[in-house]
Image 1: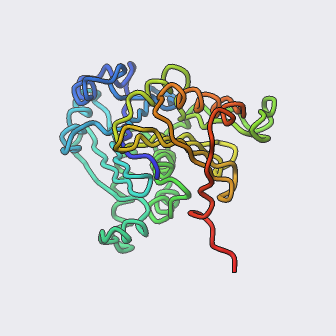
Image 2: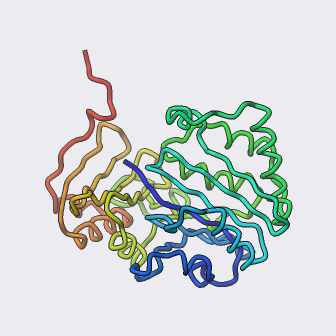
Length: 290
């Protein structure tokens, strides 16, 4: 159970929601237009996340409108349950490409896996996209991203792809040890892409049924919290504490309790755990002992 939704990367001197293509593609019900900004990169390169997609079955059309609006190359990524991620790229000159990240998982979904020649050709197209954006892609890094497995979330590969294109790094989160340790564990800090404050509240309230919100820890990839708005309208809240044997879940009908719990997780607090009765999910992720 992971994240399902879209990510978009574009260059703009104003918030992405203010760009007509993205504002028009929102559901019209979310207070912030369904978009939650990720850490910004220098030069006006902005990334945003939509927890239930941009509500279009025509991502190429949305991408064309976005490129026309900004006059710069752009990317759109569609993620399914943190397993599958298809990325589309387009430039003002009309050069375009698409790629599925984590080809091994794609094969599990019976999607044909490209051969080495096709992977190299796609990497070349992506390098051309980067060049038109004004950056020099790293060929080896591109090939690595296009062939590697997700560990554990495929959306992380999307951000690795952006990095491999040579774009400037996002504003970094504080390194472990730069601040006082939290009660959660030494080095616990929410990833820079995690929504906080009002953005976190909106992300929970805007969840569509059968959709997820995942918060990752930048200090340990086996530490995360997530919430699933089940089809019946209740919330399934989960957290993992650095090991698959320490994975727990609970259910609640209260969005406010979920917001308070995730706010506590982001802060590295532990008191929020005491507000729920938890059940272990360790058996889902570990082999039974003989």
